[in-house]
Length: 114
Length: 115
Image (tube, rainbow over all chains, first blue to last red; front, side):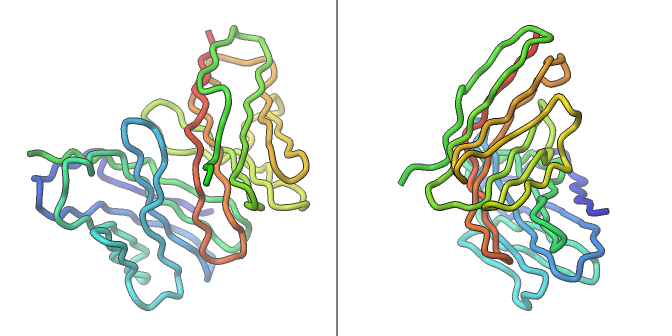
């Protein structure tokens, strides 16, 4: 069965510093996609970044990068130069090839301190 | 362009009543998902529609839950005989499903409260 694990229920980071949010996954699929979403207090889900299992390069989108270590089955999100507006819940998610069902982790709440 | 819309934004109902939640996906998106998010929790997959294919209902928690998608566009999630544990935010998402990369665009959600 597929599973996403986010072990950090809450994280604090100082403004302008970098922070890494952990995500490990478990799947028997050979091909899969990994996603990170941000959910501010307003409740909307905002797509941040995507990594395909066969992508050799780590994905980057502006201040967001995904540290993909396939052998360790980890897909950590790195946010550089944190901003106060980055304070939110962050969800790691995975979709396999067996269908289009997407599994989400429990989330990590990030607090950015001024 | 317009994003995913959901209605109502809030719904308060009494235990035992039926409720219908509506989702309007982004025009042209063939895939539509329903998720449930309980307070402080992650998203729980409920059901997935893709074009005219049979939906993936594997996430529906009980037979009180059902969903349909008419004309490949608007979807309705129905919960019959609501229970207090059904209280949650119900999120709808749509995407262009052409395999591989599959960014889902989420609606604002419907907050359901069962008294």
